[in-house]
Length: 157
Image (cartoon, rainbow, N blue to C red; front, top):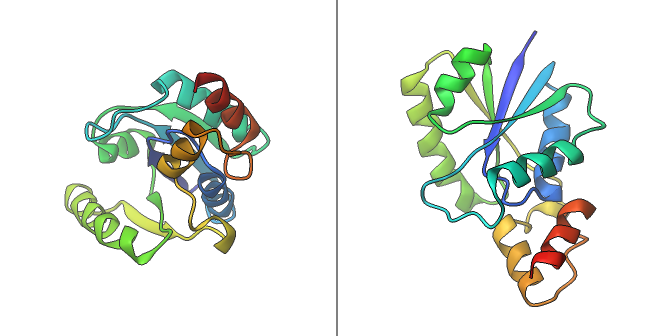
């Protein structure tokens, strides 16, 4: 059984993230979405809130589970017996950073493959930061974010 890890901060999860998750379910038997903190980011939502948003959003996908973890993702992958990491690429600008991370992960755990997936064209311009900015100015974000997340952003502003 092939297990893949899809790590990220998911602050918050967007339809682009969800599209990547759905694509990954067609390739792997099991997907574990790992919500984490990034020391270079100041999250808008708590780790628990982000985990709950992801869980609610993927509840209808039987081969997807959600977890939290803070540490080297290769250690988590090793513990779970995962064979791949899923990473989303929206644009060429994402590739340079993701490529560096993939090479570092390969050095740390050579048997763990990084699989890059692109979202549908309709989601390539969406990212969590832009969605939060639109929401902060009272813009409608329901076209970018699952309803539970859009509602939470609206209530928090």
